[in-house]
Image (cartoon, rainbow, N blue to C red; front, top):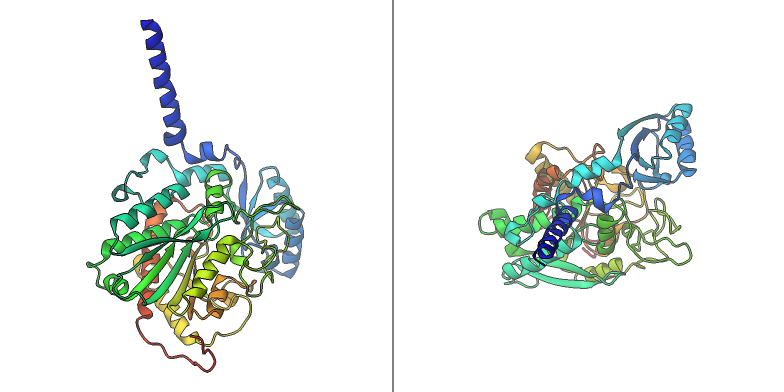
Length: 447
């Protein structure tokens, strides 16, 4: 009997060690994605003329590829780089076709699985037990982020309030943190959302960083003290909660929401193409299996509908809308769906210039800024167009680091510098709201 007890004990210890190795010590990519990306490559292609553009669109149209940048083949233009993720079975074919057409290209990620494993590192180093030990320099799962939100709310009730604006398609709460002193409940407000696209993990990392920095620097940093005293910040760390969790556990490069389409068996909508401004126009797709699927109708996604409802309700107070994305190192403002100048252009342009100057002061990283249509490309109306059309005078979309070397696989070692510099930019935008900027109210009466 004693021998049996010892054997049972040893077995239980061994099982415990296996569980620990499986869930804590092993690299995230090793068990989350089951080597599904081993041998996959990411190509950077630069079509030099219109003939190259037509040939490239034809080549990609006959392959199943994941466009990283731009996000739709219709947006491919000459002399603009195209980053495309290609399955390992198709890499040789793409090499051959590009050489045959004499289109300039290079492979900048030769084995996608290895880059994923580098990005996430070892989970054993992550501190999750309390807010004080929370590690802001790693990427976190949805469950970890939401637990952190609850604890932050409980620990700082004088500065933080937590609420839900609705539920996702799969029934998950859509949590928002409200930051600011409660002495003046009708203060001007700033909305910040992150994680609209599931695979852009640096977005949720920034929203958490912003909350941490705002709270920790209150009463020590005169600028942040003034901002929290005179403004409210609505911070939504993960907009696309279902998609983010799916990208964390199943498909690292999932972009869309997790809504269901029975006819095509393709789940999900590009939440940034689901707003009612030039809905499903250029740069969006009406086919459910495409990454840029705009949905069956505007605001069809419960996440978009819930946020739109909240913003409409509070639009008289919300003076700035900021959406955090990746990647390109840009700061964009309306319009994205047409070549036209917004009525309060001088005010918004000045705010953008101040923001990128503040960002540059941290590490010397340069961001391009301007209207999305001319700085990036003309596309179907996005959330910044919707916010602007609904009376929010300052509407911005950040495209954070980098410009393509890592793409969506920004290493955890770059979370700190990326968030530090972006924090300066957001503070600059918010600080500008406390000053008056004259605009033509006859042309833009709902500001």
